[in-house]
Image (cartoon, rainbow, N blue to C red; front, side, top):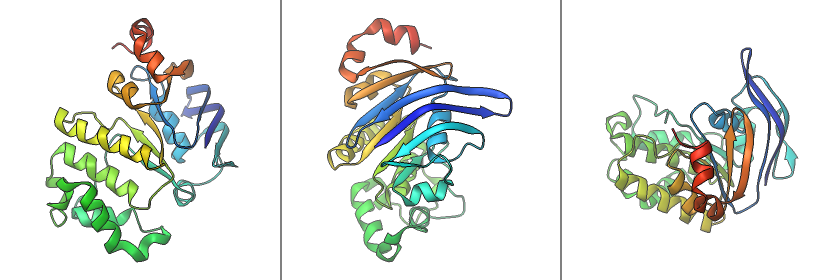
Length: 234
């Protein structure tokens, strides 16, 4: 469903991605791991259309998307959950979720979809009319995920969803990711908690200094402590 080939990306003169190759098949949950600064976030930003200087090939659902703007990629069913959360201040939880439907053909079903999301995320259901920025960090992260899922995407890019979140909420999130996968949604997950990510993933890639240095089934990588120590240890 996603095929990245010889992907290069730059921040100014800094050549961050240096020929990344990876693929995610339909219905898979694939994790992308590696140390801070390895290029993981740059990879998913490139897929989402948020990098200005890139070259190579990104094929999504059988079509080249490298030249498409971010909103066109979203319209094709490719959602992105950023590391920074980006909750919009001044808006309620409900209004933040509505933002995910602005360019969606599902906009007409807004009330129904928000009810569905509220049932999926009980913590948000209790806070729909609360100012979103007054929630805890974990609740804001749930809102970011809910906002991305409002348009019912086919593919979700998740960037460090567990960062700074209490373990109880992390467990809830990862149960949700597993349920998403079972429902047919394809996922590319960046996660610093390598063991947790590998336990729910089908396959995994390790990125180091802007290149894929290792790829294997998630179970095999989970069992190989030496590989994790070599490329993922802080």
